[in-house]
Image (cartoon, rainbow, N blue to C red; front, top):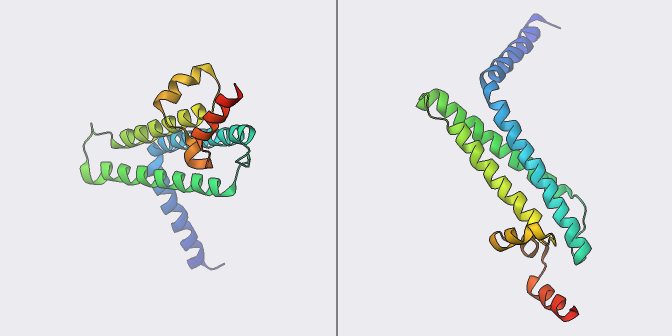
Length: 158
């Protein structure tokens, strides 16, 4: 290996290490957002299992296109967090402006709402009934389940 090649790799390692050191304060926010995405994905899978059990209209399995969407969402929120962090450090340079925390908080709040929607959709639990009155039912939108017909069938059975 020539000296020029070694220098090229050393420069690349030093540059990426410096960038990682500069962006190190973001890792906690990115990790929290990643955990929120994973929990949302799990709750969506549980909803799929409930839909399969109740109506037979879902596979009840984790699908690769959902994993692709999860990876894309993670990449988008990580990119937005990095961009906002750079804006805070380079452009705005205000010490008391915490836009990175604000953006991560908004994202996690939206993920929590999505998790609650997944948990309350088509759930027979008593503690989910108040949430069903407030949140939307994702079964109708994502799994092509006509809830009006399902409610009529349940009333006929009783």
